[in-house]
Length: 112
Length: 115
Image 1 (cartoon, rainbow over the protein chains, first blue to last red):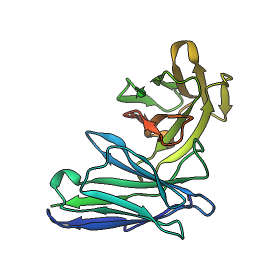
Image 2: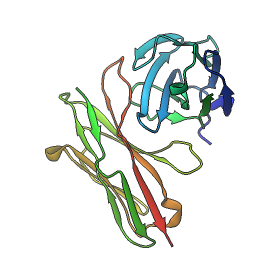
Image 3: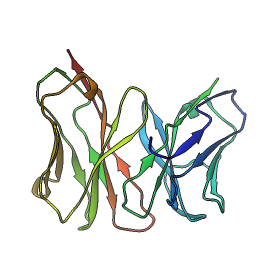
Image 4: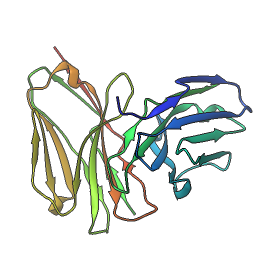
């Protein structure tokens, strides 16, 4: 058990809808990262937060947004969903930059 | 630009065989970190090892060993006497020593160990 909690485990929704994925980092970890894993793109970095502030941005679509709250949990919001957004979304946390990332079990999103 | 290449998409071995997973990285930075992660069929990503660019010592942990060679920009992973439980996707990853950068993953190598 990595200590990172992601909910829900599975999400099935229709195109055009909006969903929110939630992540609770390991106790003591200030950084939260979001990754998208799909068969064709592999593991793609989306965004990082550190202690509530956005720290780095990767290949995150404009339809996607995230935030980290004062209690350090994070939410990833995906809107105007398309079939191609179907993927496994991972949250990870770390103590500091370049510390190992500890991943949650992921949220599998299926857009129909 | 930073990049991680795992040229082996899939490897199949029989139990007790040794297997090496290749990882080649690209970066112009002199300070960086390399990682290996394992993703078993259950789907979670499990951290295996981290090395920094200044430490080229090979590392051994049980049946696992890692060979880091800066001269060839490689960070290869060897499993000795493979077991069925080693079946998983293995990812090599790179991060830079800069704020605002994140872990860059290779495409992964799927290892299948049969009994």
